[in-house]
Amino acid sequence: MEGGEETLLLDQPPPTYFAAWDVMANDIYFYNGSTKAIEFLSLASDKITQIMKVEIGPFGRLAVSPDGRWILVSRVDQKTANIMLVENFRW
Image (cartoon, rainbow, N blue to C red; front, side, top):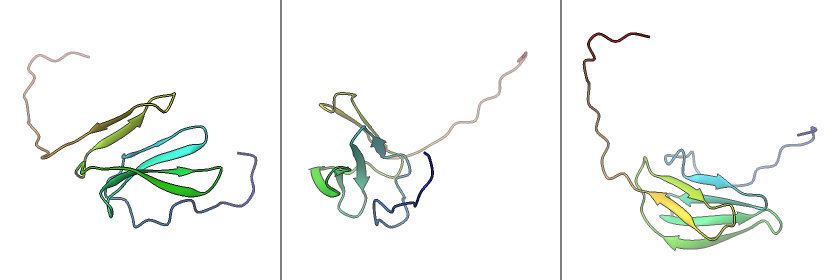
């Protein structure tokens, strides 16, 4: 935050799973689309550890509880959208 050199933390291909990561105080949890696993990078040791294999799909999300004991993963098997008409809308 006070300047200095930037450091590459993860040498991964461009993300197709754009929101499947969470930053904690000393770790970065992320979904690795290449290995189809949730992994974490320890900022203290620069070591990546695989937590579990899971496929979340391209629109899945990942969140870690503040105490690091729980990981919430959302899976989206398909993405669809609906268009609706709202009549008499007032701002």
